[in-house]
Image (cartoon, rainbow, N blue to C red; front, side, top):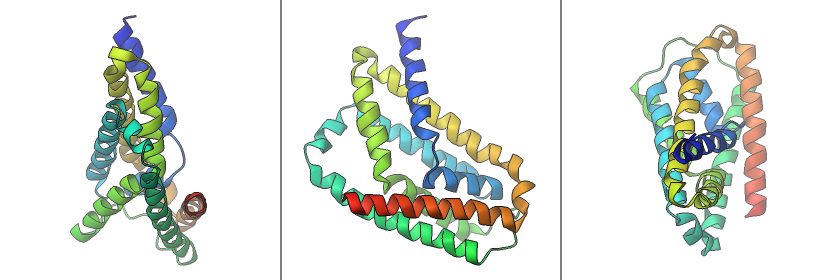
Length: 204
């Protein structure tokens, strides 16, 4: 196996291991996928954002930001507040459940909200920078001339994961057609987001 293929495979595996975790972004993509609401836009935003962040990390921006610790602290405060707000909305849906899954998406206004929420969940989450920019960037640096091939593999892993999560979520449509199933999902999302938000604010 050529060194380039090995580097790309290593990047794919590393990227996938960092992406596949319970979090606001994955939960949001899953919810949009089940509702079939702006799935292509949401998947595209997540994958493209990861590709940009990976490129920044591989290009060495991570080292530059580390030199200014105040940047990470500021992002932590903003991201923590956002996660608490998103968690509160999910908790409210648990207390006031809807009618379950609707096969069709809402109007264009909902799609705009979906896009804005996806952007916020992606770019206001400090963990994204820690994982994608700093961690992946430092691992890629060890690959020397093949660091960009490693980064390409990581970006491909992100695209595959979000596409599978968004478009594959339709298979869960029958199960999540029940309001009780949404209450469980929203309960998990609320607990996860509030916990992460508190930890980020405490760490800031």
